[in-house]
Image (cartoon, rainbow, N blue to C red):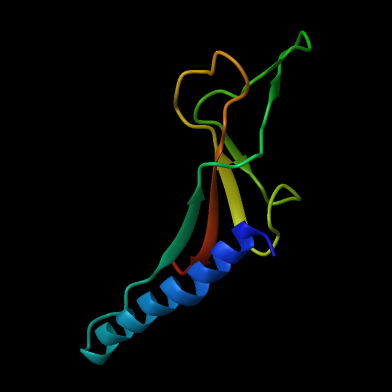
Length: 108
């Protein structure tokens, strides 16, 4: 397994389980159980995206660009997406996206 997979598995088994146990306390006290969404954010990744101009030149995507990974970009077991940070374009190299992986989603 990769470090990312191991980290994700650890989050699922420890953190999510602990939060779910804590939320059962709400039900035992007669309070409505809150819904939960767990998102893993990864900033240091090797994935890169590019945009092509009409003249064929290649550039970094614009800040704030959203890239859905419903296809083979990421782990098919979890829904992921990428966002290009809203920073100045880098002078050299490409913009480094931030990856968001939805581990559990009870809220729609």
